[in-house]
Image 1: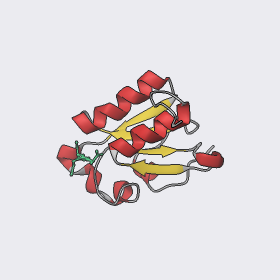
Image 2: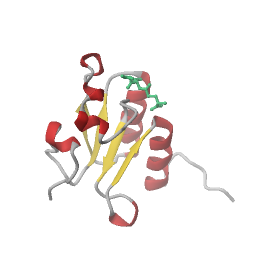
Image 3: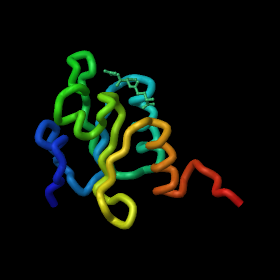
Image 4: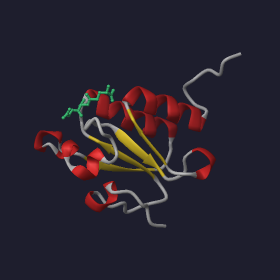
Length: 107
Ligand SMILES: N[C@@H](CCC(=O)N[C@@H](CS)C(=O)NCC(=O)O)C(=O)O
């Protein structure tokens, strides 16, 4: 499996079948990592050095035009198609829905 997105030219996926996390050890960054650990989903982390402005490189901006971590690439998104997502809150909701964990379903 080869993942087809510019982000992987700079940060190659060693495990392309796993959800790919692009993040850094900041409060917004770690909350997605914590969620992934708690859900037990298989993922591959990529550390983005925001102090070196790596989140403003063309490869990263192709993933998140806002130039901010965290962002994810899920090769197994809705209906099995790849999904790119940024904004930590949106990612947490997506992971909760994907796994059926940590979110009560509306009645
Ligand atoms: N609302 C966004 C905020 C993301 C954010 O501010 N990320 C910071 C680190 S915590 C960042 O990437 N800063 C680098 C930059 O803006 O260049 C979220 O919750 O994901």
